[in-house]
Image 1: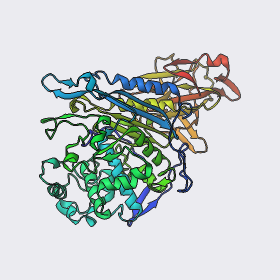
Image 2: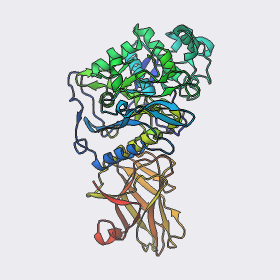
Image 3: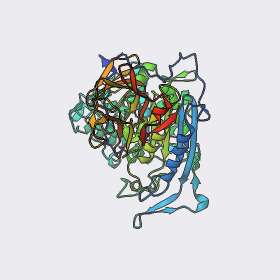
Image 4: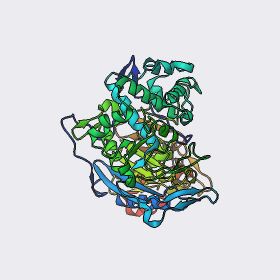
Amino acid sequence: MADARGMSRRQVGLGALALGGGLAFASLPADPAAAAAPSLGGGRPALRHGSAREAGLLPGPLKQLVTDAEAFLQPSPEHPWYAGAVLLAGRGRTVALHRPIGMAVRYQAYDEETDTGVEFPPDQQIPMAEDTVFDLASVSKLFTSILAVQQIERGRVELEAPVASYLPDFGRAGKQDVTIRQLLTHTSGFRAWIPLYEAPTYEEKVRRVYDEELASPPGTAYLYSDLNLISLQLVLEHVTGRRLDVLLREEITEPLGMRRTRYNPPASWKPKIAATEDARKPWSGLDRGLVWGEVHDENAYSLGGVAGHAGVFSDAWDLAVLARTLLDGGVCGRRRILRPESVELMFTDFNTAFPGDEHGLGFELYQHWYMGAMATPRTAGHTGFTGTALVLDPTTDSFLVVLGNSVHPVRGWRSGSAPRVAAANQLARAVPVRPARGRTAWFSGMASAATATLALPALDTSSGAARLSCALWWDTEPKADVLVLESSADGGTTWEPVPFTTRRRGGSAEPHPTGTATGWSGRVWHDLTADLPAAPGLVVRWRYTTDRLYVGRGAYVDGLRVEKGHRRLFDESRPADATRLLAEGWSREDD
């Protein structure tokens, strides 16, 4: 089922192009924390459980991640967002958090008259466990995409080839120019979905896809659609001669040792599977009663449980293995499923024409609406309608799995993506930012709908030529959350922006004529300089303002200094000066 979309998205540059059916790879920005993939024979150690410190993470935010997640077991605001969840967070090859909360099976039905869930007797309810298996819903699209990129590697599929060159009947109804890339990036022009479950036979369902007209010309708009991945499934099955479930097993799960990932789990798995919805009309397309151990999505169910857009079941550990494999450039131990350059295609934006809808091949990129403060131009992931999410951040080499049964007992109880955002914010917060100098730096915090200020004492700059310098680190939700350097000559009654210049270590100078910084800065320290206005009692401050929706990792300031020629008017490194800083919402943080 297509997830709710429409949240703001950001744009990054295109790093890979398909030319004449072959792949041409442009140089991509280096990731300071990303692990370089070894040769196939080199091998890598397997994932392991370990402490936050062993993962290079701060333990406090990981504890808060669990606390935040447990809050959504309660009404939020009217109903629980999920009956339960399994949370997994890690960095490098260490899983530092793997925690089940709540119930995997709680309700036997939904009472629409009272808008309540009818619970199973207590002895029949099943608590979440670390190895609880979930219906991944649209996270399944990532597996179909990986299978497609494998076939691109092997030359059986060309990224820029028309889909109709593999499936001639697909070209009906004006779809003759739709390409494989457009299916993978949701720019084909398909509408979000159609009720294939109403068609009586498999052949009729396929015919309806072939006969479907486009909502917009190919390549002219972004529109998230299940039909893209269903079409890609048909291509893959045609060129390989194997069903999608066989491809999944032979090309991904068996090589990676993902033993709890598959389509159509057997009946013996049912006690370890999280239940989903009491599926009945009118809120469901089909009358099925409690869906438990079978795919929730109506179209996938009608396709026999094997579909390109939905139907994969998995647990948190298996998804962590997949995440680690992709962060390592497509290799796990001695088994490689993708080349490093193919993985880059998944972390590279192909949708530069559609700002806010960044998309690699299969993976969504830079989406604060569920990635929260983990979002960077290269952060990749996907969500699922049943309450699932996978997020990979190559910049910090970290990964997050949130698996919730949020349609249990009914889909109408949950709204938005707040639990995913909360978890991602805390994992981002757990990745420490080391001060530019010494052991502490000023931190703005990560609160939403907030303003934090860091002000210097009043300085006499009346003779002019005073210059402020410091080290600055920022990562904010672009445009929505803004860091401003400003000054006041009248004791704080009025404020004016102070233009400044930043220089990334080893990079070129970047002017900020409006005195503001927002968005992505590489999560590295920048040297900042600013010429200050002349005034007898000038107050200079940093002001960081966030909106009520999403936040980035925040802002850090270190080594504040104001000089006039060879004379220092303020120096944070001197204890007497540092104590005169006025911080409201900012705090000094250890490395």
